[in-house]
Image (cartoon, rainbow, N blue to C red; front, side, top):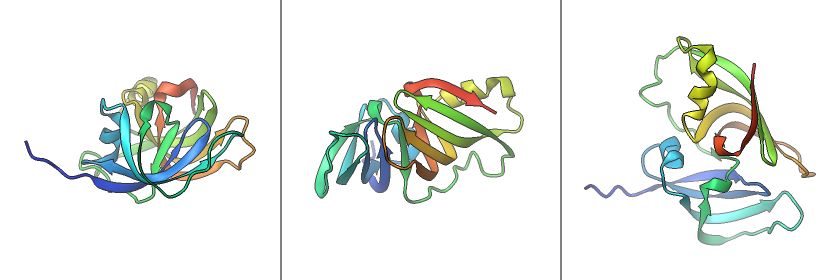
Length: 165
């Protein structure tokens, strides 16, 4: 077995009450790393921004681990090149409103043109973390301004409702 060293990607993670800024260990591509069976991810150079009263503000933490179960959404600060599978594939864009347990995401997502629109929800929910673009994330009950992320991965396990248009 070849031991592949991780690449450290700068990320921002929206949890249920804070935003974590850190570097995340990735072997290969980001989405498979998020969707693998490992419940925790390794983080380096961690800082947190509280969104709700009582959440800690941390900075300068050299390393830690975080549970993917509590990630509402996660984004990379660097753009990952498209996968070889998606190059040249014609896509159609749909807009969505994802209502989570304590947050909402207004965004768009792309589907292959030939995919049956009745199966789009199933295609999204096939992966635990699914990709969206042009996202506006709002934490319910927080006085903080909504976050605008060009692209991110949303945790389907925290869904209360999903609306597609």
